[in-house]
Amino acid sequence: MTDIEHNTLDDLDRRIIVATQSGLPLVSEPYTVIADEVGCSATEVMKRVTRMLENGIIRRIGAVPNHYTLGFKGNGMTVWDIPDEKVKQCGEMIGALDFVSHAYERPRHQPEWNYNLFAMVHGKDRSEVEKKVQLIADMLGDDNRGHEILYSSRILKKTGLRLASAK
View 1 (cartoon, rainbow, N blue to C red):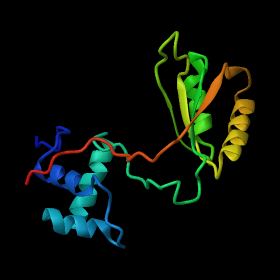
View 2: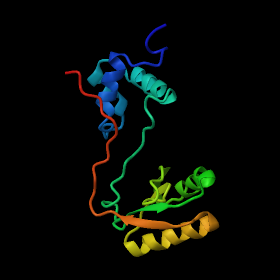
View 3: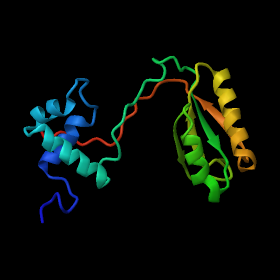
């Protein structure tokens, strides 16, 4: 069996990851540009990226918008105290809302931190965010045992794990 069949990365996989980890080129055929950079065909790049997605090596490929540039300046991370047995269900419900970019479970750190569900709510200003948070609270009903809004004070660069270039 080859390395690819064993769900490990070979040199070409690593070069593809390094070439794409800062984002795909903003052109009509980004995989062709990546293929030229790593020395293979665009078809091979797409085949390997698909395999890495299917095997969980790459978690996802998606757009990362700058919400401030789009006019959403009242962004707030909401934190929720949800019954542990319902946190997954509630997180999926909140994460499906069009004004929430991401929702995820985090461990509590009691007694100081009772919250186990986080959800980023976007709005044009804080007043809009507060109205949207109230919609979430109403939707959760008794499953909302408390929440807070932690407003963004600056933009942080969002990056995941990075492989070092083999150059």
